[in-house]
Image 1 (cartoon, rainbow, N blue to C red):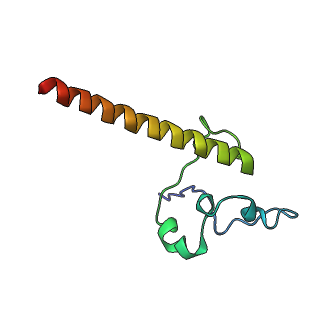
Image 2: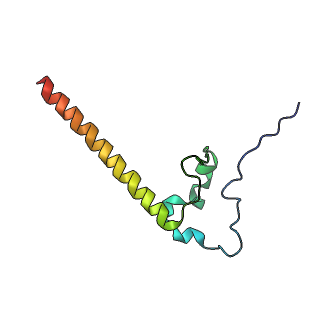
Length: 92
């Protein structure tokens, strides 16, 4: 019995289409794969969340999503901290 595993191509092996050279310069450094992190990133499991993010992000869209995630994270952190403080005061 032979098993052939299907897997995604490594982002380091994937070549940019003709005419799109330099596309990485449009995005912040932390949103693209880095050569100095290749060994670490090749060991990780990546998946495509096409249900929530079905399309490729254009540079401006990537920035707006980052802003929304940051704001939601800050809101949730403050909400939990306030709830814990209220519970602490109620016990006193």
